[in-house]
Length: 409
RNA sequence: CUGGGUGUGGCGCAGUUGGUAGCGCGCAGCGUUCGGGACGCUGAGGCCGCGAGUUCGAGUCUCGCCACUCAGACCA
Image (cartoon, rainbow, N blue to C red; front, side):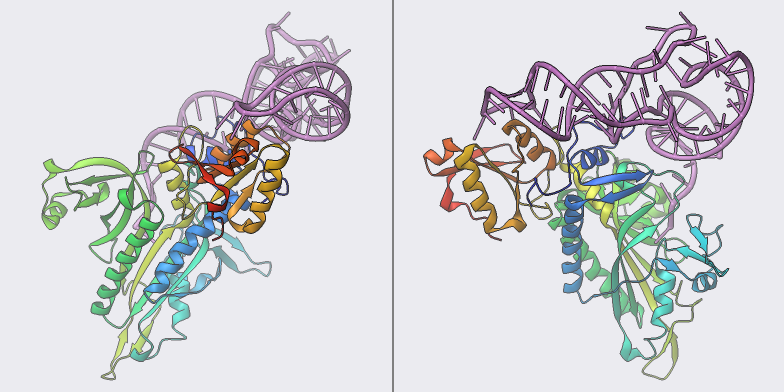
């Protein structure tokens, strides 16, 4: 990407209204724009970062046999009426609207009902099972208060996966696989060292669900953990019965703030029963499909990564998800020429700062944008046939020979 | 939803006792600069959140609404 050609700009300041570090930096660096409370647009850099996160999730889910689909945001009330969740008393975050012709419809806050309904058409025999389907979808939730930048918004990107199995055993096996995939995902996203599987409320249909909680001061959740962090539980399930279940004592638990970056849920027959999702088993018996669901808030994860890594100069992206790997600056006539040559070898991986600005501003922007490596080519470095490469994370610089810099993917 | 704060050029802000709307950044032009957000000159850009009211006159006073924001409550 050539900075002279993109419409994106950086800003030196942002209103004092925006107090969340993630939103402040992402706005200043030109990754996102705030449209209204809890509603953010993604600009070229932000979108690219989001897609990188999405791809990591996609790869890991595909590895465990999941299929990607894309359901609709507009919702027919019918299946929701069957599960009882169309009623705003039960689901108070609905955005509901009307068809011009008169009927009601809603903007999906989640997708259990529509996918269960969809599967009725494709599941009729045990031979059709198991099915593991997921999507990346915009969810709409009419939160009373949006806050913490992109950590809690009214419109957000979520990966939601649903499992359909013939029995509990198959489900449990998959549940473990999904857990493993989640840990790999968080590792690759750079959150592996501070993200834990956490016991949470299972709602009315199972004793527990699991959340993946990233320990973080700005996290909205409060979690308790034992010394070696083998047991982590959400404050909402902290009671004597649970402590016995998990084999821990209240005194040995520490407390911390955490951000929920994923959850996995055993749904059992919660949705398949009211929606009548059944199959014929081997023995000819009609049985109800066993279900699970597995979510990751993709845009929230992006915010969590910002919160974890950013410093006073700006964003810092792990290499895996950075929108570009190199931020290239040519100084002086010869430096600019060489920089352009280098850029053309792999524009997909490089931001070329070819704007007519002084070097200081370019350095500052490279840091604000959080690009992992800054490469400077100038008369000075060219005198010895080198470039200067600076790592954003550590701030360390070194000179390397021009021919040793491999910008190809 | 309850309680506080804030709405003024693209962004960040100031605006005294009511009297023709300002600053910084950014933007355009010219010149000097050019390895850490340079400088000089010139210039463009405003329904002062919206609606009523008081007044000869309202960014400023009164009332209502809306939005943003912080804290709380809420958040399978």
